Length: 388
Image 1: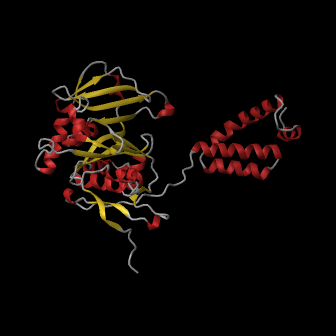
Image 2 (image 1 turned 180 degrees about the vertical axis):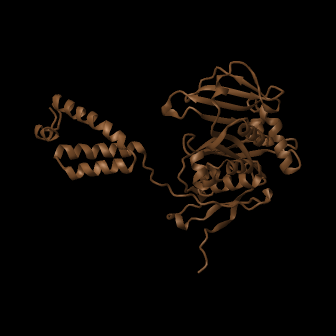
């Protein structure tokens, strides 16, 4: 029996980005702590300079900037967590400057970090941007406009917010929440690059456009729309589990692959396929027809769609400890020796026996305090606990 496919309208909206770019990359790494003790500019490999700052982040106590020979910032390093609870002492956060992601020099910077003793742990945040020419496959706001006009419905799980131009035209949108694992937004990139806030990005982004198209669309009076995906590392790992690895050679290959258009396209297409779900209005979702036809011909590659792995129930050490304590209380309050043995067996199995032995006295004192304050545990139960 042939596979069932979702029908596509003959008048479907074709979205055809001409380029897919890495727009943000932040990594978790472990690294040498002596770097975070510098108090003055320090020479770095490749003619770079490491500068101390007075910035204090929410998690890290020290923030350093790496600048090139021209004084432009190419990398931000944050390290030395405020407390042990926030992370180990050698844990660092690395964020590459936007320009290095477009010209590919972030790969060389990563290699330099490895040479300096840093080791890859995982991605913390990654932004992938798809750019298209308005009127020629870059109308990323068209599906939202169709919903606003009543000719389409959104069947995804995200909450979308349009940015209106006047009363009837959708000029941009946000899909999802910035605090979520996945977040999308679309806007007029040409207009942004002409604004004061975007002027510093214009040179290298337009150079990337010219490399993809053979010409600069902004110079020819064309409007480039951008659809931007922001994903946390744990969401990327649900599609690309190879992202999190302890093998540093595999990690280097993963980072280097992000400098290639095919890998960026695979990530963007895989994470967008189900989230950007617009169809015709219908009583039942299965009867609705999709109104979007993604065309990646301009990128010269059909994406390798990765399925999203199902969430697994993670049991933390703290939840195991709470469970053991709960069982212990019931066992002692009821005098159930078998139940007590089970609590002890769980502690041994979870390699928490030393913690268990040290905690028993504390738990007894807690119950004694409850009794003294007139708590809900009865006298008979406490007599079984043999608390004097």
